Length: 491
Ligand code: AMP
Image 1 (cartoon, rainbow, N blue to C red):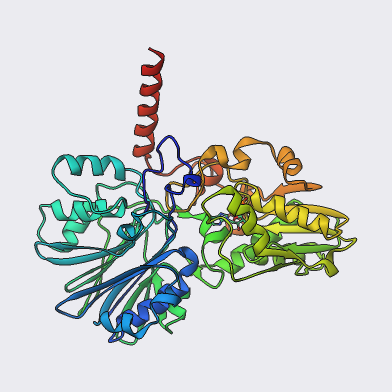
Image 2 (image 1 turned 45 degrees about the horizontal axis):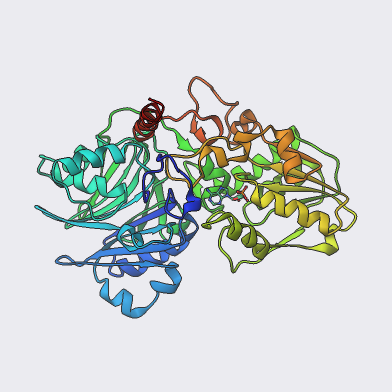
C-alpha cells in the first residue's frame, strides 16, 4: 500500500510524506491461537516493513483489531495485546511508513463493516491507478478514512453489485492495476489473492488442520507450518472449514515476478517461486565474478544484504572472503530514513571497517544494489580510512535507473544515481578504483534462464529497464496535469 500519490510532482520521500511502501502480509484460518501465530509470522516478515504492524482476529462473532507503530516483537508479544485478539482466524500486516499524523490511519489490516459482514484486508504491493479510482469513488459518495491505496479496494468491494463476498472481491480487483498480494478475512473465509502478473509473492502453508498464507516461506518456518505451494499469478484461494478452493478469476496471464525480491527484498532463507533466495543471490555473485573479475586480495560483503552474493563472488573468483565490515544490528536499514543528513549518519552508525583485515589489502566490496549511492560513498571511504590499497565495488544487480511503482520503496528517477551518470562517473562519484554491475543477462542466468528474453521477460525488472509490465494510469495523469499547468504558466 502507499501513503500518498507517488506520482505527484514532488515525488520524493525526503519530504517525509511520500511513497513508502514495503509490506508483508500473513493470514491463518482454523488455529485456536490465530493472533499469536500471526504475530510470529509477522515477526519473520519484519524485514518487509519495520515501522508499523497490525493484526485483525475473528472469533466467530466479533472482530478484534490492533494496529500499532513499531516492531512486531515490541508490541504484539504482550499478553494484554494478544488476549484481546481472540479467535481461530486472523490476518496481519507489517509495513514501512513515515511519520505524520496520518500514520495510524494507514496501518493495516484495514477493516470495514459491509452489508454481509465484516472484512479485513492486508495488502502488499502498489496499485498504479488507485488515485484515479479514488477520485471516481469520492465523486460518487465514498468517504475515505486513510490515504492508502489499499482502501480503494475496500470501497470497490463495498460498491460492488455482486452478492457473494468472493465475487465482490473479484469485481473490485478487476478494476485495479498494478501489484497486489492480499490476505483478507471475512466471517467465514480467509482469502488470498495475487495480481494477474504475480509481482509480489504469496505462499500457502498448512499447520495441522489450519491453513496459512504468507508473503514468504520464512513466515511458515517460524510457526512450523508446512509449505504447500506458491499461489499462482492471478489466483484467488478461498479458505473455509471445508478446505481450500482455488479460482483463476482474471483469465490466463503471464507471470512477471519482481526480480528485486531475489536481489534484496526477500529474506535469504525464503524460497519463492521455487527458487531459494539465498541460492539466487549466491549465483548472482558467481555470475558477477565471471563477468566482472578484478585482481584483489579479499572479497568483502556490505552486510547484511551483500553477504550471499559476496560468498558466490569469492567462490567463483577464488579470492578469500572476509568480514571486512562489521554491521551493528541495532539500527534499521539505511535506506529507510527520512532525510539525506540522517541517512548519512545512519550509514556510519550501521557499518564499521574491520581495520585488522583491510590494511594494505586490495579489496572487492560486494553490495546488492546502488540506489542513491549514499551507502557506497561511505563504505568506500571507510575502506580507504582503514588503509585499503585498492577498493573495487561490485554490485549484485544491474544499475537501478527507474523507480518501482509496484511496492518497493524507491526514490524518484532523478535521485537514482544510475539514472544520472554513467558507470564510469558513478565509480568516480563513490570514490572507487573500479565499479561494475552484473549485466541483465547475467542476472537472468543466475535465475536459471538462458538470458533476458526482451520480447517476453520472465520477471518484472522495471527498476533496471524502465519497462513497466502494467499501465501506470496515475503517473500518466500526473504527467498530463503537470504539462497542462506548465502550458498554463507559459500562456
Ligand atoms: P543507497 O545507499 O541509496 O545507494 O542504497 C543502497 C543500499 O540500500 C544497498 O546497500 C541496499 O542494501 C539498500 N537498499 C536497496 N534498495 C532498498 C530498498 N528498496 N529499501 C531499503 N533498502 C534498500
